[in-house]
Length: 304
Image (cartoon, rainbow, N blue to C red):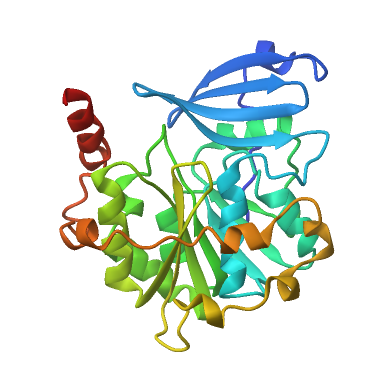
């Protein structure tokens, strides 16, 4: 599928005039998002605004582009424990491309195909976060589910990290979509999804993924509410036993030195909250009340 790049800048002229060396905060309203870009020193953050406040989507340190500023981008590399040779990776959701720099440095011959819905996100990545798509890191402007449905390729990793104002669009949360993702994986491919704890949606997320994938392992990002689910479509070998995972030393690439602590990621494995998952509902195309489930627990807590 041919990558799509914006033919003209979508940003306001005044926004484009911001000095590269100065700190700044800018706001952008698009068809899909309300975005804030804030530069403090060498770190540029991309945040999405909603009625619930601002959600940090990505951040890049311009003085050290390989640095994984946002914690969960490190946890995404848990995929290495199950597929240590990611030659073809599909990532749904560009954010600020915080994951991309280190991955490309570690695996320069790998293909990292990104799908992003919002053209302004790509514009901001290029103009504010110093991301330049290449033949190895193409970006297609398209709905992620449409891409997966049309795409006929097979992927070693398929990463779902698509957020809109702090929540994932409902059609990217369903059993039907996850089956489409499973069909796009190689035989030993791994589906990697960024989930958030703290609401009823989290338990439905897990139950829905388990309805499709026979093996699922969860990793909780240290000090954050992010949980990375790694799922595979095969039943053997067993990936749920850490004793059978490869040694961290065998997975280390030179680019990881000083930037990725795989031993820490390995230790972030969490025990699944079985009771809550058992009582959760599987999300389907006909039943996917994502926003309701994402708020009900928070609201109940406030009332108490």
